[in-house]
Structures are given as C-alpha cells and as structure tokens.
Image (cartoon, rainbow over all chains, first blue to last red; front, side, top):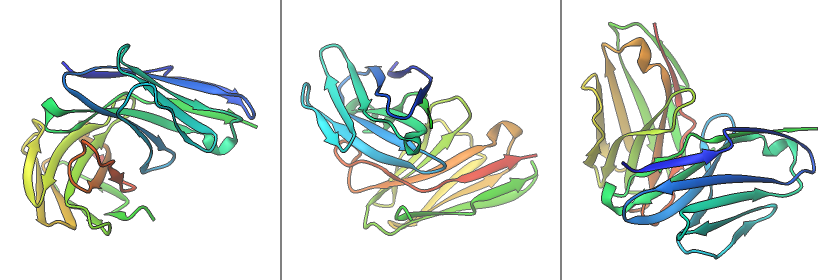
Length: 112
Length: 114
C-alpha cells in the first residue's frame, strides 16, 4: 500500500531558528512529490519535485528530493511567526490515476 | 482569494438533512477534486473529475454524491450523514493531471454533523 510519512508531527521553535521537515514515502511508480503550507484553511502550493538532488528554493524555504532513499526535506531558515502552519507533503503515483497521497502533516509553531 | 471558492464556509446539519457543498474555480482548470480533512489524519481523496467526467471514486459511501455540471463547478450533495463525517471538506482544481500540475485548494467547508 502506498504511504507517505512526515516527521516530526509537531515542532515548536523560536523566531530566527532553522527547521528541517522530513517526508518519506513508499509508492509504486513515483511521479512527483509536492509540499503545501496550510495556515487556516486552504493548503497553498510550495514546491513540486520530480528529480533527485535538485534543490528548489523560494525565499527562506528550500526543498530537495532523494529518489534513491525515498525522502524529501523542507528547510526553513530564519523562521518567522508567519511560518507557523501545517506543512503537508504529498506524492503522486502513476499507478493511482495520478492522485495525491498525503502525509499526516507537520505542525510548526514559531514563537516570537 | 485562492481562485477556488467554496460555499458555505461552515455548515451544521442533522443526520436526516440534505445539503450541498459548492465549489467554483476561476483558474481555467479542467480537473476538480473533493478531499476530506479530519483531525490528525492525512487528507483523503474522495472524488476526481477530469473534463467533467468522474475518473476516481475512492470508495466513498453513497451518502456523498458528487456532481460536476461543467469544468468550473463542482458540488458535493450530502444526505443522511453520520457524526463521523464531520470534517473540513476541501475542493481543489488543477490544469490537467496532478502528475505535473499542482492542485489549487479552496478554503474548505467546515462540516459538523449533529
């Protein structure tokens, strides 16, 4: 059965800290891995990763995929209180009509 | 504004009621999705519509009935729900397959079944 596991499930840090969120997966016919940020309601898209070893970056956020070891990390540097959210990892598998398989999410709280 | 609009934002209904959730996307996408988000559980895919045709029905109970009259609108009709159906129901859309097109989510409808 395809599955996506995120760790840690929750994390509390102070402003300015750097955090690393983990996502490991077991799927057949992997196509891509996506990261989303969910604050109050709608998850908003952060990154889509399809190739190993190529870092994607957006401001203080960056992410990389390792298709050999079947995981991805999401890094946030110099965290701010506005980074507090649930971070969702999802994997697309071509054996599942392209549906996204989500992990449980990591709840990040950044304290001032 | 996310480009995907869901109404209502909140809904409280009894187990014998019939109600509908509405989703509208203004992004020119051609695939639409319903997801269920329960506390401490991963998002669960319920239905996928591609070009107004249902392509995925993820073993969802028949008390949930989707309808996609055109590529911009998606409904979820609800009847005789159970308390465990209380959750955040998220609509999403994408341009083409989710293989290479990220999903854009609406703000969701928070459903409480009493």
